[in-house]
Image 1: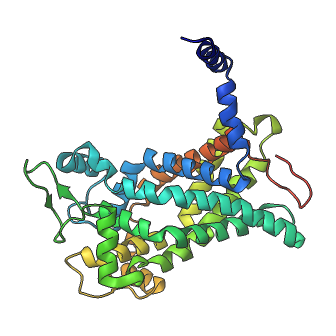
Image 2 (image 1 turned 30 degrees about the vertical axis):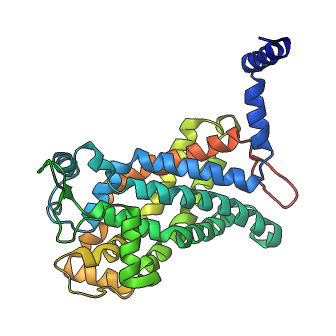
Length: 343
């Protein structure tokens, strides 16, 4: 080994030991625009939270869509049935599409929330700097994220809806629904586009937008409002963030849940053998009234109990992971006014 090689090796080893290599990585992240850091933080937070509750999310979809064989089962029995038919991987059926969707969705949701919030503070001082700004910015951010990622949500629902018996035969998989099973995200999107074009890919987006606008706004509103009442010394506590996030998800979801049921049924209606060909619900209101009349008003809240179990850790983990990622990426403190920043 020559002198120059030895010197280079020594320098690299020294950098590894004293952490200068890590500092170079951090300095590289420091150079990224703030909105890019917000995209990274939001995407990571969303993926982590969604995967943590994937089994509960699938059970909720099966309840909402009245999937054959799951209508009268409880959470425990439903989980057991999926395990028997599809194994452990069955708990994560559709989670690939969910994560593929949630990364850009959460990234856009959190990033556009910050951007809308700054815009409102700078251009509409009459709104003040309080929770009204969080409500408006959160609603606008939720709508933006939904419009950009809705086809992936459609794919996730269709994949989660179908039950495929992968344990009944060693050589083939058999769909327990009349529809032949989809093979993946690309297959779902391609099939839906071939059958209904762009309108097919956005089937059910109406109730989604009507539901997400108040839900997203309330979620940010409640989270930020609860944080404002926490003493300064506890502001960075993970337990505090989890608690505030859990309550935000709990209250926000309760008010908008029936619209989520309408959306799920619109997304899978052509897969259900009991339905006539063509669209069944032409609008969100028609969906609400038809479900209440034909299936009973309780169906509008089908899966709500499991959604409470799911949404509390999901929103709590999402907000907490986002705040932690913001600290790690050194994203500037939240803007309180057009000219000042504060925690």
